[in-house]
Image (cartoon, rainbow, N blue to C red; front, side, top):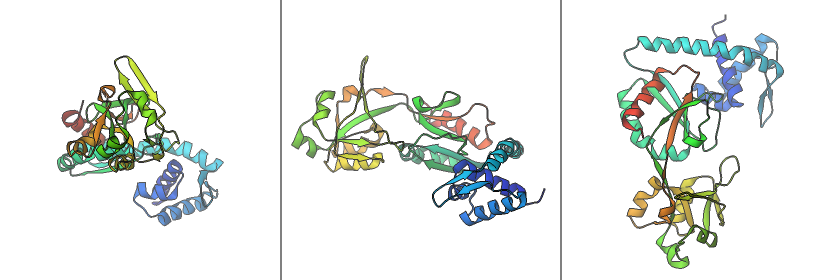
Length: 298
C-alpha cells in the first residue's frame, strides 16, 4: 500500500460521513484544499469518480458507495488497533468528540471540563453543539448528549448533570403591563417566545401537574432557533419564555426575571451521555464516563 493511501481513504470516509469537504477537514484538522487534494488523488489512482460535486452538495457515486461499504469495517479495525495501544499507556489519551445541544454546552461544560482536562492532560476534547438530532455513529462522534427521550434505544445512556426542571419566565416590566398567567390556558393570551428546532418543528411547551400533562402550541410574535436569544428577549420584556431552570437562576435572583406557573414545572430526568452499545469504547470516552459517574451523575 502506498504511504498516502490510508490517509486518503480516511479523508474519503470523512467526506462521505459529512457530505462536506469543509466538515471533513474540520474533523481531520486539515484544510478543505488538503481534503480535496486527497480525494482527487484517490480518484485518479482508482480511475473512478467517488463523489458527485456541485456548488451546494456532495454525494457518493455508485462506485463511492461501494468503496465506503467495503472500507468502513477496515477503518474501524485500524482505529480499534490503534486504540488498543492506549492500554499500554500510563493514562488515557486521544480525541473525544461529543455532539450536544447548545444549552448543554452552556450549562454543563464550564463546570465539567476544567477538572476533567486537568486530570487527563493527554485527552483532546472536541464538543460540537447542535440542536438537531443526528446519527452520532455516521457523523463520526464518540458519544452524544441529549435528554433521555431523545436517546436511541440501541445506545447506552449515562446520566450527566442530574435532574432538570423547566421554567416559564417573564420580566417584571412585561408582567406589570400584561399581568401574570395563573393557569396554563392563560398563556394563549400572552406573547410567548417560541423555539424552532433545526428540523423546522416548533417546540410545544410541556407542562405537568400530577397526572395531567399538557403540550401547548403557544402563540407569539417571536420565534428563535437559539434558546439564549429567547432568554434575552424575555429579559428585554418582549414576552414569556420557556427555558431550563438552570439558565435563569441568576436572572431570577437579580430580579430580572420572574418564574411563572411553578407548580406546572416539576423535575424530570436530565441530560444523558449516550454511546453505541456495539462499538469499542475508547480510553478517552471510558475516562469521561467514569468521571461523570463520579462527579456529575444523577
